[in-house]
Image (cartoon, each protein chain N blue to C red):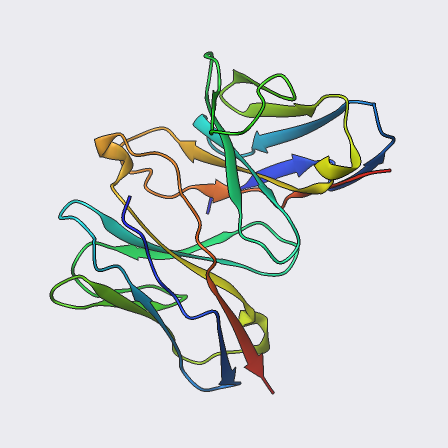
Length: 113
Length: 117
């Protein structure tokens, strides 16, 4: 699975959009970009995933560059409850046999009042 | 979304004893379950992958005789930490992947905090 690079930490004001970048320059054609987050002392929570098109759900938006070498997770109106470690993971879909998720260090996002 | 539970949520045991942690998929059948451990301020580290009815596949460096994994049904996997020592104190998290080709996501349990005294 391709390696990802994320900033160690970020701060964002409550109510503003939080934009979390992720570099995955070695991503291959069949690999998806997944985002999970982990609130302190809880299990990770799935947020969103995408292949090449931008994706949006009730939690966030995922913007993937045209060359697919980087992506940005956007939390449109951050709240204090969004304070967590955010993990960007790149892997092939389970259909192709890839099963496990390998977590990097992630970005520690702090939402400030 | 799918729900995965773990029991117990936290456990304290004495050095040398064994501890069993349960992971259950509550509203779906999990063909594959994963066990992770996480030390304070560190990322999750995958320990093993288990498929229902077959032996678990352990990651490099994880002792299979130390961490016994049983995935006897499509809704239950257990992790037993045998002869626990203080260095086994950690946050243990399981995740499950369901049946069907649309199961892209893995659903994670809330974690079990193990403290070995």
